[in-house]
Image (cartoon, rainbow, N blue to C red; front, top):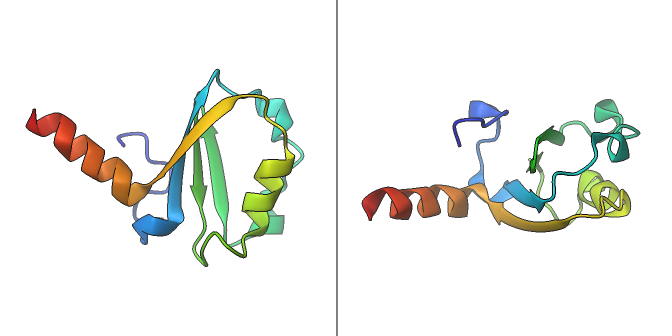
Length: 94
């Protein structure tokens, strides 16, 4: 969470996703995605973590479809920001 690339801009936790990847995706497989084509949606790859912000929701997201077609060739598990913060709270509690 300390590396959150969108800070307060991603203000609806259920539409802000963190994809934990194993192994880290090859950035070249995302290089063809022009961020301007997906505005206001945003993405950021940080090592083995892919952050995806869908301000209008995931269901009609062009970015979500493009990420799926990018064939990253890695195993990913996605959690929305609400879940990530709850998991962090649980980890700090124990």
